[in-house]
Image (cartoon, rainbow, N blue to C red; front, side, top):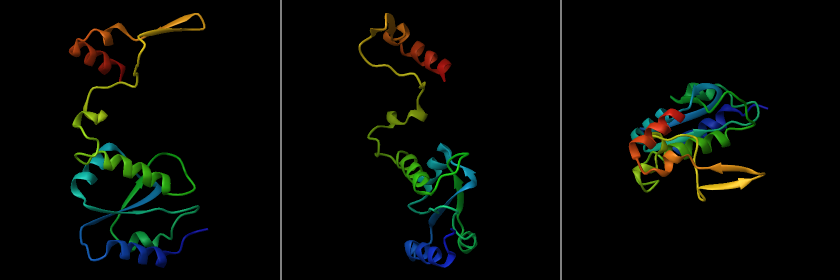
Length: 153
């Protein structure tokens, strides 16, 4: 099942209204890969965004000819619809807007981090094996901690 072009074209036109600077994003598996740089540029340069989400076999390709739009893919896989990619995009772009996260330091991509994170207690036992937080993270030496995190990336 393919969604007809004209109803989608009318919906986009209605969403755009009379605004001239509206970014239209069309989700499709063959689109450009979505990444943080795209999210940053969109958050910085676009006040209005229209997301065009298909379903099942997609939307009639003539929609892409009716408007200037970015064709975006969120990964090398196919989903049943564009709703999940739209949510990924919204979340990623929104977190780039100043004040949304409350603190600049909350932007993980702007600080040295690793995929390994730890909580309390500092150590525990499970099935006769001890699991502990790496000693460097308990040292309080920020430069050494950043170096350790950089190595783990």
